[in-house]
Amino acid sequence: MILVSLDDLPLRQSALIAAINWSALSPADAKRLRELGFDEGVTVKPLHRAPFGRDPIACKVGRMTIAVRRAHASAIEVEVPVS
View 1 (cartoon, rainbow, N blue to C red):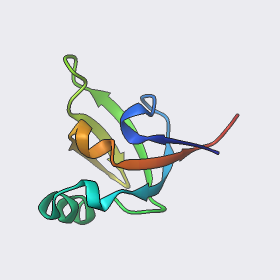
View 2: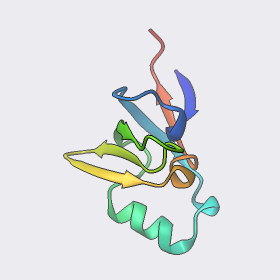
View 3: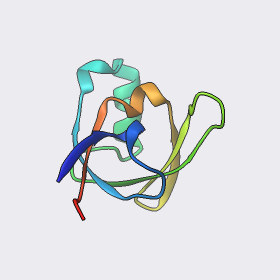
View 4: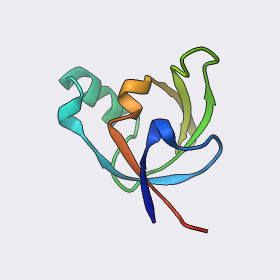
């Protein structure tokens, strides 16, 4: 397993959330991410990035597609299987 931040994960590659640096987020942003389903052990897949600055990132979490800021995605560390 390789650990990378969610903002560096290639598009359409699924990965498990290994850790979230909650202290890097404001309390309101951390609460919003939790309410949207971001937590350790959850599968996430980046689907799209905005063309300029790659912000925001559209991610699939469970059955939902959620747009997250790149700054928030950088606080999310994911496990990528080695093939």
